[in-house]
Length: 376
Image (tube, rainbow, N blue to C red; front, side, top):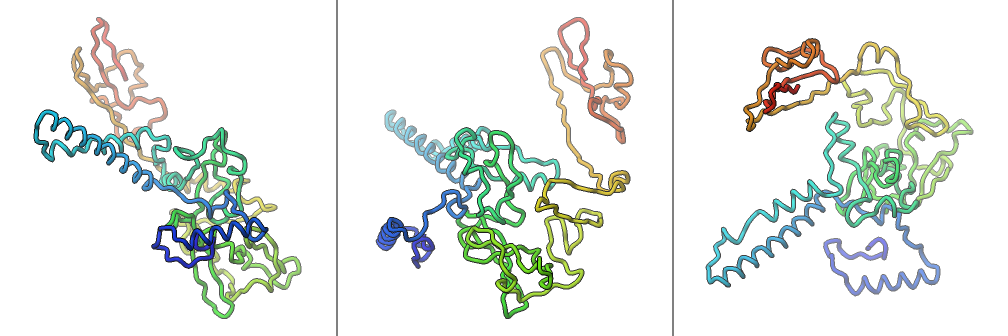
């Protein structure tokens, strides 16, 4: 509000003041006469992230309201029967437990975290959506909301989105984007000074970075002596333009074999995945994501990046009315080659090569029928 209305009220003051009302009225009058610009509802500066912690806080308030109703009912019942209620009878954790179980189990946004590998867990945890209570639905969301906005630059990865009716409504954050104190998205930038060889990294929200001239990082490797490379792409006030080299304040030079950038899976310019390989990167007419990937056949045939996924399977035996269940390798109605991986206890042997459909545990379940029934 201070930035929008040009005020200097301290941020710890969360109440409306007469100055706020007067400044807002003055701004609206100015807009009536063509002074200033209207807000863009799809701009990220007018949106904030509602995290899981915020949702849990709302659920905690709901649980306290339910607890209050329970306490009122117990007190009224005690007064009616002329009893003296005790703290143990008044306070109960049931409303809190019920509310949280309902939130994590029945909430429309509740999902099972992907644990196939560490990267899947990170990607799943950095997704955001417009859906859920108080949000939009796939049938009512307009195209303007699903569309890519210039303010998404550096904050949102526009290609990684769901397909179908929810396209554009479920997306992922950019690799280096973070959530600010007030719930707004922030992306990192390097500020380069004219008279200094050092650079300073700062996080800017979409409402602040539009006041800076942002230039692409690959402009550092351009040659100023070549006529075709005397202009660089830039972004200013949500508009993408091309500007001359003279308009870019460089205090910083690069040298041969100098590292220009580190990604999420690199450290010091080297891959941090267990093996170092020579990587070539080539954009094609501006399309450089999910178009085509060329790899050496040696990486495939020699299993350079073969990974192992360990999963834990459990099976339980119960005592039924017909008798107890037991684990065994004696399953008459199955052929012998299907039981080749089971030991004498009916459990798959160590170092066995199993595939989809192989039997890992044989369990016998007694039934009332005359013919014994075995279940693998």
